[in-house]
Length: 168
Image 1 (cartoon, helix red, strand yellow):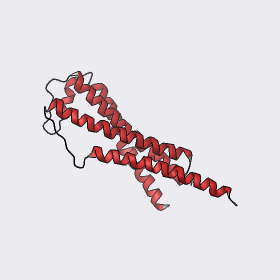
Image 2 (tube, rainbow, N blue to C red):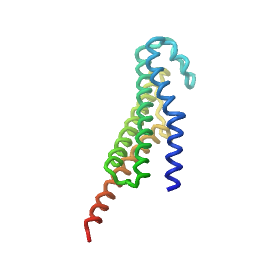
Image 3 (cartoon, rainbow, N blue to C red):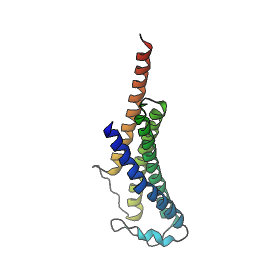
Image 4 (cartoon, helix red, strand yellow):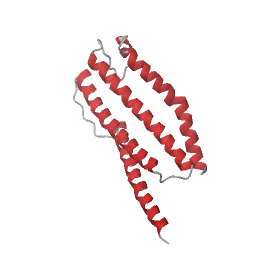
């Protein structure tokens, strides 16, 4: 139980110090780019600069902000499931559905992120690059699949627990 308390405390600390301020800044940034387009040039990555921000570049920024908010929502859902573990209800229906939701969101974010990296390289750098090594996108998809498997495992364990409770 001590490890669970440490995990919950760590998640609460990350939620309060990182996730809440980051979500507020992300929403502010995504709205502000439509007011002042030059703010996009503040964010530069690997010598990537945008001379004249277009609707295409603004759309990419908004999609990136939505993906960031989806990942923060996954952290929020994970925090809520830890509460069920603390209450002694690890096989609750909410935990199973939440793990599946987290998995679906992370897989979707990982795939969309990989597509966006490909499109950004193609559109703004005019280069076609395929990388088959380790990447954060691949890690995100793997983590999402892990949560999906965890959901199925908890579902099977819940059925086995219910059957065990019915036998004499």
